[in-house]
Length: 153
Image (cartoon, rainbow, N blue to C red):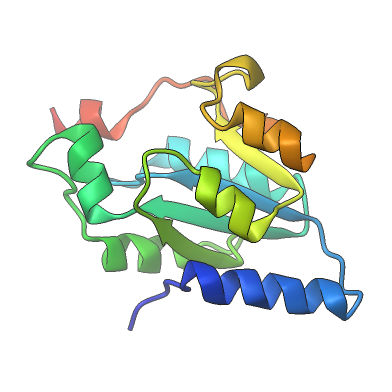
């Protein structure tokens, strides 16, 4: 059973919540999460603290392979989604194939776009979309000292 929620279905769910006046502060975090480690947990926990509902967008298997190389992902999308979805701080898990999160930001329109400490607000690839849509940027987690690629190597 997959913990993944289709992006279009999630956009509709969020739209319905907002239409009912259930205006929870939505935080969107994303990543490959190819091999979950404590740095990921700290990032997601910090992101969740920035709002009421944490949505995590995972790169698809094809996207991870493009970004990390043909031997990746180590763990399939469905398994990554189930693991991430089991974290108490996570409300929903979706996926995206694109190089950046721009289409997901446009579809879900979160209040907060959370990124890890390997970014700054100025270096976010999606910065212009965040600004256009009025989405707050939050840099979350500990300074990056761990990476899945390092653990795998």
